[in-house]
Length: 293
Image (cartoon, rainbow, N blue to C red):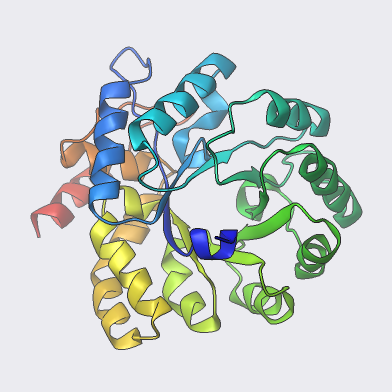
């Protein structure tokens, strides 16, 4: 099965639960994996930004990858996040991490360095050649400080064999439409903006890698499946109640919002690692009020 078919629908950028001492809570991670799979998401993305990857050490990352593969046990595909702003280090990680069971690698645009479009192209060309698995480009300029322009994405899609798709989180429907217009037939395009998924489904995207699907996996993935079937009346009906969720998830920082929801649902402890902190009390109260509704 081609990656565009394999990863069609909803992927979850899964959080990393912590114990009160900030160690990784593998029991809670196992419960969360079961929760999202049993509520019909199509695949799981481990070690994304939502997993607080910048604050995990290498051994923790390796342990999380291996645990995730074992817990999922081939029930759904797994995508592993491996990125950074040191191209050589990313290449080394791609060759040393346990990726045998991964469907693909998700790799964010280099942050802070602010490379040119040519630098972005050469970075992805280099890591794609080093990767044992297909690479999904991750464009998230709000975090990285650089937008991957549509022309660069299409150039990568056409010129680099192991670049298999893009997670487009530029909060820019026009750019997304340009990529969809010009992409090769087998090139995967998924959204990274939960609040824009519904209109982007109308434009022709293949699905989403979602934060909201951690805490509302059934409602969110049902909405995406309806949109993929072009049943936008049903999709809108499912999406409308989630509009407030999207706002609460990102009103302060990610993953503080989603961890607050998951804590109130009894799935994890409400613990984050600095520099990210838990939601302020007023916003957390709004999370509780939403769930009571």
